[in-house]
Image (tube, rainbow, N blue to C red):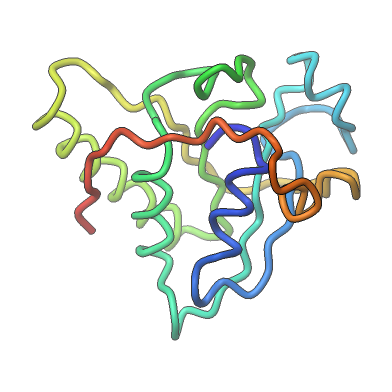
Length: 161
């Protein structure tokens, strides 16, 4: 969804979300750090790991928020944040979640097509390989820096689950 600071804050505020952390995944460098990820050479995405109680909030509801709270059509950017680390991506733990995420992408693309002529979703969906925890100063960053930067902005299109 872009820079992990605002995304983490958004998700930690949802009922049923037990815990969040920020990190890096989807790349090819073992144990990358922030400076390496920002070069664009590691292939990693700034990622938010969400631990949730499915009795309170379902995976499908989390996907709905995912689609509605950012612009999944921008490719390697979100707003003013440009680079491969800001691309839209979903990393799933298992085949069930992979199928649900793929189905939600198809549904959201239909909704986008109703409002926009040509806005193809560029979000990638894949199985999680490795998740590397980001540096401590990035964890809960916007709780520590309430006026910190956040470029997260949706397209105003509802996602039908």
